[in-house]
Image (cartoon, rainbow, N blue to C red):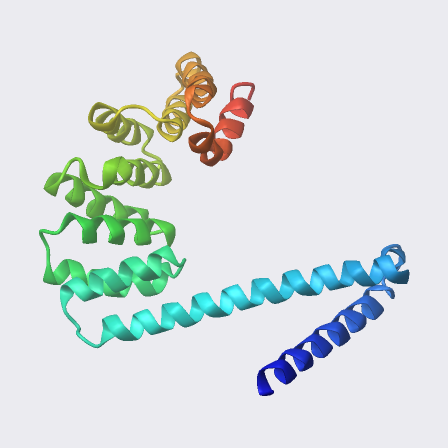
Length: 236
């Protein structure tokens, strides 16, 4: 009996929360009319449901991350520190990731993955000069590592330092090893524009859309940022 009772209590709490939200939103001038009547109540229900789902997902994500951090922290090997740093970086915790990845690099200096991840974390924290060193080291150890992502990160880091020629050189190495893609073409256009090669830049930006059109639909979905940016920069 306890399970159904608990479920009933949760529904009551949920409905009370929706009523409170609807009541509060009705007080907002020019906006509150949307939340009057039965349809306004159901709109509040949708909002509370969305907020509850979002909050639950965030809580579960944080719980899983905390558990995984504890697991990796039990054995402080360089490999575990690298995995921990990578996990933190993937969850947007670049500052915390740097410390773990520095330990990983110190313990396994010939592992390109740790140099790559440390370079990525440093770049995201605005430490582009150090990032360049780590990314260059990763490429020297394994030129094809991470399917070209190392070269892309190096391109971005060199651009942050105001070195478009160096960024373009990293892109050319990427394209020789892995071929052009939508993102590398966009970055090529940006580097060429910074070097004053306007016609070549526009050609690269034009190729972004042309290449994207040839991609399967499922691959095209992740290219919107680069396609829109390239389209706009063709006219600026």
